[in-house]
Image (cartoon, rainbow, N blue to C red; front, side):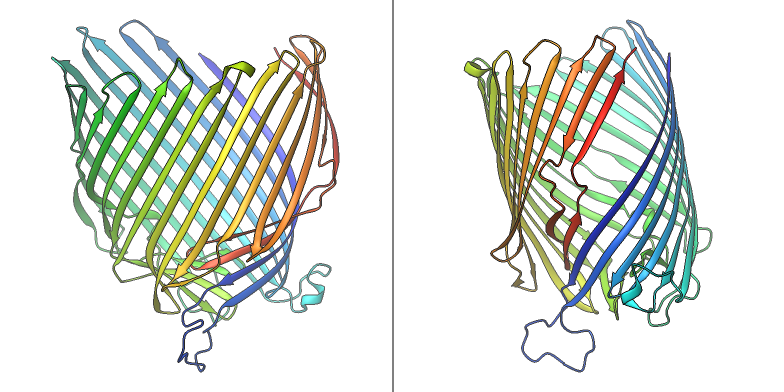
Amino acid sequence: MSSTKDYSFNRVTADASNITTYFLPNVGQRGRDVSRPYDGNRIITENRRGTEHSHSLSGKFIYELNRRTAFINNTLRANVDWDDVDLVTSGSIPNEQSAKLPDYYVSNNFKMIKRFKGNHLVTLQSVNEWESLPQTLTLTMIPDAADAMYRVPTGNKFRQHISDHAFYTHESAAYAFNIKGVTLSLEGGIKGYFRSMDSQLPDFPEEVPGLTENVVNTNYMTLYADPEFEYWVRRVNISLNLPVSYAHYTFDKAIANHDEVYFSPSLSFDWKPNNRFSGSFSGGLGRSPMNMNLIHPGLIMTNYRTLKAGTEQFYNSSSQNVSASVSYKHTRHGLFANGTVMQSWTHVPYTMSQQLYGDYVVYSYADADNDSRMLMAMGSVGKTLDFMRGSCNVNGSFSRNESQLFSQQQSVNSVSTGWSIGGKINGNPCRWFSFDYSIDYSDSRLTMNGMSESWLSTMENELSLTFIPYRKWQWTVSGEHYRNEITENSFKNVVMLDTKLIYQFNKRIELAASLTNILNKRSYNYITYSQLSSFESQRQLRGRQLLFSITLRK
C-alpha cells in the first residue's frame, strides 16, 4: 500500500515570430480565375509575446496484493491542473488572448489475476474515469498594429466558454488456457462513454459564417468479445484474432441514434527458426466508429484566427493493413538488427475542409468520401563495442502519407513524404570518463495535386562528455548543434553549450550547479509542413543561466 501527493507551479514567458503559409488551389496553374478573392497562397505573420502560469496538484493511492496464485492492484488517481495563458500578438491580426484552462480528472483502475489448475488464468479489470474541462478563451482585437505590443487593447472583444464533461467506464473479464500447444483466450466486457459539451462564441465577425453555439451529448454503450487463438507448428506461431462488438449510440435527439456491429479480424504469422533470427507477417481489416468528439456542428475557436467545426452526422471508417518485420541478434558478437514495413488504407465518408475568410481559417468536414493510405518503413543496426564498454547504432526511416482534402471548396490530393537517417555511439573507455554522441538528418516535402514544394532538411548533433575526477564529483559538458533549412538552400545554424557540476555529499544530499546556454544564443529557427500549409517559426531562447540546486532523498 502506498500513496503520493505532488504539487508543482511553473511560470513560462516566451517570444516568437511566426510565418504561416496556406497553400491554396490554382497556385501556379494556368487559367487561374483572378476574380476569385482567395486564389494564391495566403501568408499570415505573427509576433507573439506570452506568459503561462501552470499549476498542478495530483494524488495517487495504490493498494497491491501479490500471492502465488493471485494478484490484485487498485490505483486511485486524482489530478487538478489549471493553466492561465496571456498572449499578445501583432502582425496580420493584432490581438490579445487570455485563456483559463482548468482540467479536473479522477480515475480508479482495478485489476485482479487469478491462476488455478496450473495452466488456467482469469483476469478481471475495471477502469473508471471522469474528467471536466470548463475552459474560457477571451480575445480582444487591437485596432492599431503598431501599438499591439505596448497598448491596452481597445477593439472588439470576443469570449468563448466551453463546458466539457465526460465519464468513461470499462469492465472486462479474460480467460486463457493452453492445451497441447494451442492457446485459447477470450476477453469480453462492456464499455460506456457519457459526454456533454456546450460552447458559446457570441458576436464573432460576420465574415466567418457558421453556427457559434454547440449543445452536444454523445453517449455510447458497447458489448464486446475478443477471442484469440494461437498455435505453434514447426517454429511458426499462428495467431488469429476475431474481435466483435455491438454498440448503441445516443445523441439526445441532436441526431438520430445508432446501433452498430463491428468485426475486425486479424491474422499474424511469427517465424523463429533459431535463437538469432525471427520474422513476422500480419494483416487485418475492419470497421471502427468515428471519434465522438468530432460531433459538434458549431464553431470552436482554437486561437484568435483558427476555428474548427465538427460533423453533424455519425459515421464509421473502414481500414486494411499489412505489415512485415524481421530481427536478428547475435548476443555473443553483440550484433543486433531489425526492420519493419507497414502499409495501411483507410476509407471515411467525410473529408477535412480548409476554408479561408480573409485572414481567418476554418477547418470543418465535408460530406465526401476520403481514401487515404500510408507507407512506413524503419530499420536499425546496432553493435556493442566491448573494447570501450559502449555501443553504436545506425537507424533510418521513410514515410509517405496520401489523403484527399478540400481547400477553398476544391479537392486537393495531399502527399507528405519524409525520410530520416541517424546514428549513435557511446562509451566508457576508462573509469573517470564517458561520452554519448548522436546525429540525425531528416528531409520532408509536401505535394499537392502533383505540385511539390521544396525538400526541407533538418540536422541535429548532440554530444555529452562526463568526467568523474573524484568519487563524489561529477562534471558534465554537453553541446547541441541544429541546422534547419528554412527555404531551399537557406539554412539556420544554432550551437548550444551547457555544463553541470555535481557533488554527492552523501547518499541523501546532492549539491549541483549548472550553467546553460553558455554561448548566450537568443533565437532558434525551424519550419514544418502540415497537410495544406507550412509553419516557419523563430523562437526566442532563454539566455545564459546559472542555477544552484540541492537534492534531498529519504
